Length: 326
Image 1 (tube, rainbow, N blue to C red):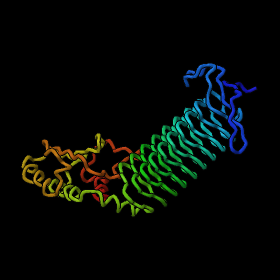
Image 2 (image 1 turned 180 degrees about the vertical axis):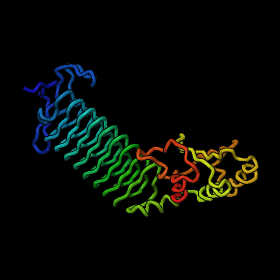
Image 3 (image 1 turned 135 degrees about the horizontal axis):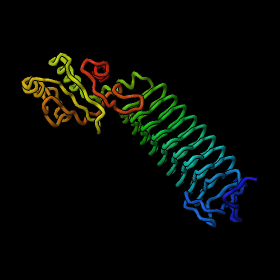
Image 4 (image 1 turned 90 degrees about the vertical axis):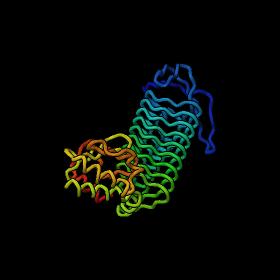
């Protein structure tokens, strides 16, 4: 006989389709949910809807073949139905809806008026909230966040530390990861990957990698590329770029540089190439700190989506890629 931590009460709701939902009442303490024996919870259609140390609270409804398992929690006015599964330590609350064959697991959270359905999966520490929706066979995982009116559909994937918001739509086979952000009315579809620190907004409509490159080109200060080439020329490639610094900051260092080169050539060139807003401070000895650039090339990112914590020589493949990319 299956042991249950609750019982069905006589408090019932008759649905429009004729189905009956029963309010539950805890029969044991569930300290991880701050529930004491005797506390009343939400509503289920049958005991197959709730098992393990999971809990349904407030006015939440779970029905059909949906299951809330392990230490998961559904609360507020949330509705879970169809063949959906809520497991692990996942949370579904406020007025969120989960249906179809969707699986919410790990420590994922579905909140607000978010809707998750189809054959989707939301897991890890991912969050879907606001009026966002995840449908079809899409997946959202790791620490990714989807909110506003954003839509994740098709076979798309949003993961790592990516953020999708506004009225953005991520469709078909799109992959958004790293620390990328897609927002406003931007639409990605086709076989597109957006990664690193990229930010795509406005009315961007991206269906090919070439379109993505065009968009990023248009947001990068052209003077920065020219200044890097100028440094390369004056130092014969004997410079280094240090990445992995907070707030999209990186540094250019010229080991054993003659002060005259800095004073007479490299410092005046900052204004010449229109970079004063990105380089608020002048050279300090052999080092220049660059701040506030709209983008840092995704080609300087590792596969985890983080800026490489490294120092690259001026003639290294990474720096050549940076110039080519920007």
